[in-house]
Length: 72
Image (cartoon, rainbow, N blue to C red; front, side):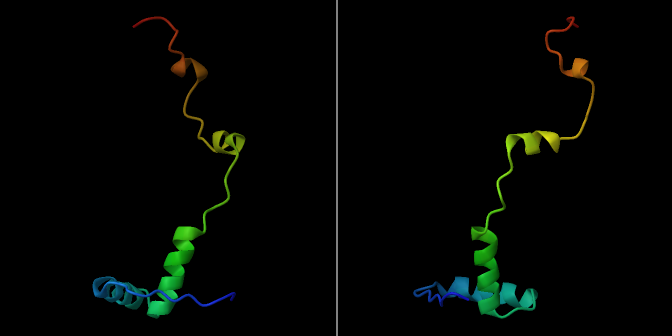
């Protein structure tokens, strides 16, 4: 690990909530704090537009989406 992090002046309600969540997850408050920071700050790698488009399901025929087709 690179360093220690000290957070001061935290509202007692937040500390209590952190401890409750940590207990529910079977972790120490310190481990829960690390997990919260990791989850919030570690973003997934960005996908290209081609990757996003290729992951979309095939949900019909091109004609189903043709807004210039016959009226009605």
